[in-house]
Length: 382
Image (cartoon, rainbow, N blue to C red; front, side):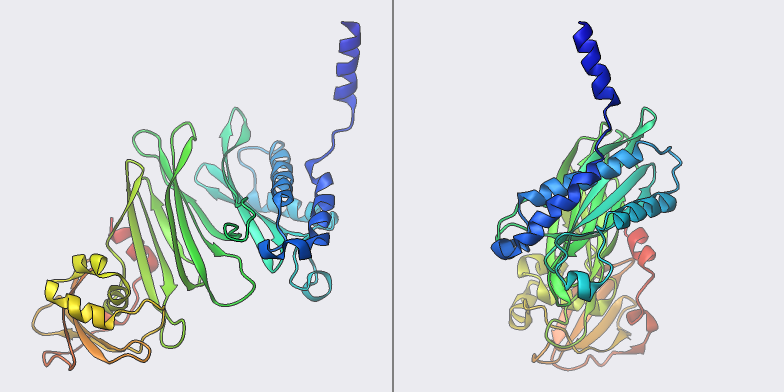
């Protein structure tokens, strides 16, 4: 018994190794073997170990702070420690040369209501693979209650991610919430890449299950959104892949018993609606059409290659206060004139399509060309 007590004292008195201590060695191993794993940006299962070393180090630092922690000051202390350990790339050309294996990026810390959100970034070839963690204040300490990492390292399935936003809704009557992430894939270059929007249902005990995993190939202009206890809504820049104008697309999903159901709106302006209507399969566009006779024209004009369009000024029609004309043509496609019904706030339907302008559609109205405030779109649809 005395021997056991003596050993326990030795363990407690022994210097504790900080989780960050082993991270440089783990990362050096990855960097040294890049050529063997270039198909996965140099990532192997060792990257998961590195992610967890960094995550656990952040957690150890959180163990010493209060609920009212100043997140900017806390992030600054993390930056100083990472820089002191030589883990931040300070010269893109000399140190990294676009190979960020062996380095990490700054840890981002933010508040979402009563939660702390931590985003870490682990270097890979051509960029960073980011992970997100959520902490709740329980029993006088910050406890990790949710995490999201990309840890499947095969050429087909590894999807390194850039996380641009993490939002947590207010609680519903049962104490459950929705948690949403918005971001994009990490690639070596190009303005077009896979965007993602993901959502988890988190109950009052912080158990979570994914309820939405949406992706689209579009411009990497950061998607922006809002999460509610039973819905997610976000917008992103779409089109313009080869030539022509981009447009703003909107996606709105309600979450019902763990199932995500897409509902309106899909756009906030008539012209954006037209391009989205043309891009979607008829099974979706039919629900936003006032006549099934539009199916043939939809098939003729539909584009799925992400090209831009060349719009003419949108004008209002005198035949009805909710009728608008959109004139445009897709890249290398014919010019057509679309009569669109716009019901407040952002409900659109296709009325008819013509080769020539509609005689009653001549009323200039800036509402047809002016994007509403983003918060207006995100708030008024509810």
